[in-house]
Image 1: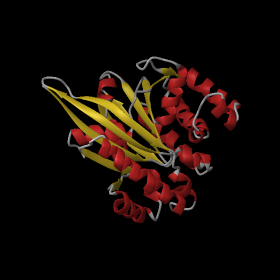
Image 2: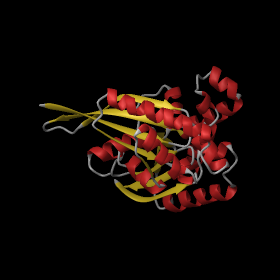
Image 3: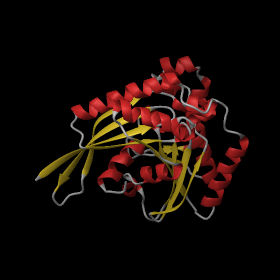
Image 4: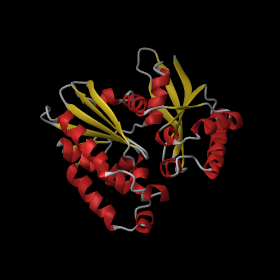
Length: 296
């Protein structure tokens, strides 16, 4: 007997908003399967507002409302039985966030919860990481967003430590990450990884997924430090326009991808990692799984 449940997750990030619709396939005696039915990404850069002026602009509020109305209708068409919508860094910092959440509930009938960095990291980590984590190894999980980056250390299959830093791609784009933040990140990584002989990185976020896709590698294969370093130099050698025209990057990806690459590169350097695995996971996948397993 096969049962299919439809779940949806809305991730309101600092660089873009996503709606993921998933089919959860239940079969007796087997682990449930989570199959992506639809993924819609809308490039509304809320971080540009929140990190520079401290509030979401009228224009972006209107765009958010329109996007949420569209998400609501898509969920209705797909006959989604349960959804959750989480907002991260940009909405955490915008002083009119509560007002925006209220307006979206009223106009689009979507309830949004603003979550902190720790909860964000925990939701992402509750995805398929356990399939990846070999119990005899140490991993540094790095999730780069537009407003913040979450670092989580796993060893022997257990979470050792986790920390969120205000160093995201949109902040870096606006020169808003001071040296003191980089120093803090370096110190945290070095301190937490120093007792482990070998550390491997696991990367998540739209930018590392794009870098992985560009490598042409098979899903289970890792990217090397040398590859990430050469890609960083290559991306830096191109203009913004060239990155769009020659690499086929979205306009809202072409400017932030360099900053994201720098974060992964530094994390590898400071932890001594030579490889980075890029599983297809993110906050929206985590929301669906956490909903299904009753964790949220």
